[in-house]
Image (cartoon, rainbow, N blue to C red; front, side, top):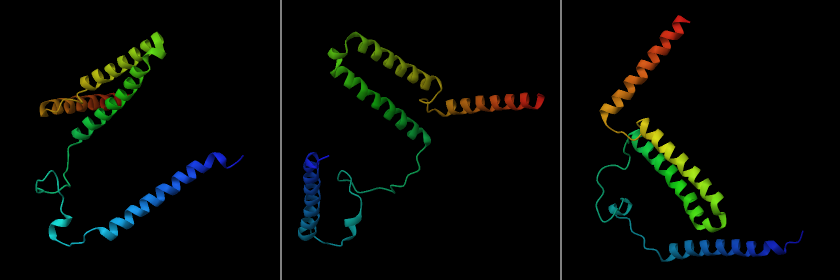
Length: 144
């Protein structure tokens, strides 16, 4: 196997390293140096920082974030399907219909399970249901 197909990749890699090294060297030579107290503070939208960035968030926020990422990622597949719909024809349409149906079923399941309900009353109700189910299982295990 000859090395001919690899030379563009090697040239590209060398150019990337040269560019990165050049940017680091030029910024270290031309950059300003000052040690003021506000230099290391966070700057966000022109507002002075309030409080710490180390907040303790409820698990509910992470659950919603995970659901968002899952359903947002599925949008990528739907977008790719929409671009190539003419090549896929009717089989592609029916396949995407099944895909969207599964997504809708997953969303309904999450909704019915209470994953999208943040009220304290709903949380207490779910905890009570789980306690009753565990007590029932414990009782059945003792009888067996």
